[in-house]
Length: 158
Image (cartoon, rainbow, N blue to C red; front, top):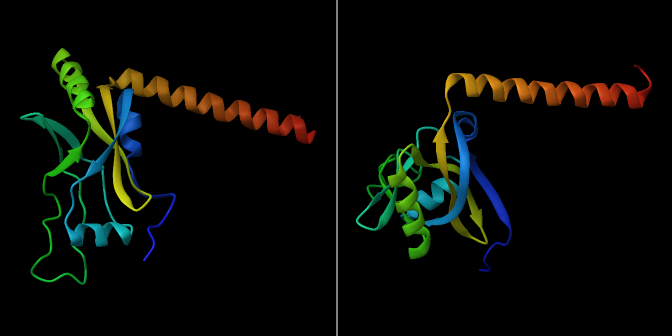
């Protein structure tokens, strides 16, 4: 059987982009069991409460929910187990240095298959305050309104 090509998005963490300032992103592989891969291929996962920690020079993904595979047997996995992320040593050392600065955390942004391999996009992020969130919403609304105005003007509706 040939390996599938391209990228297939499984889950996205839109709340992370709202709650955090994204400073840097990294692509990491995941160490998964067989039933986890099958559950992901069915397109089911949640990154909402997920975060990553660095322990003993390894990066671990916590609180990412991959539901049990419906046709799995006693070999099924635990839905919220810790999963090891596969990164290069230089990337891990950068993450260690940045997270020790303070105020920075590692959050997952998206989970996808890339050329048949499960990947997660993680971000080095700084938390937003409530006024930052309101400002982000105001900027987004202003962009939408200008796009609508330009569209109306181009259609001649003024």
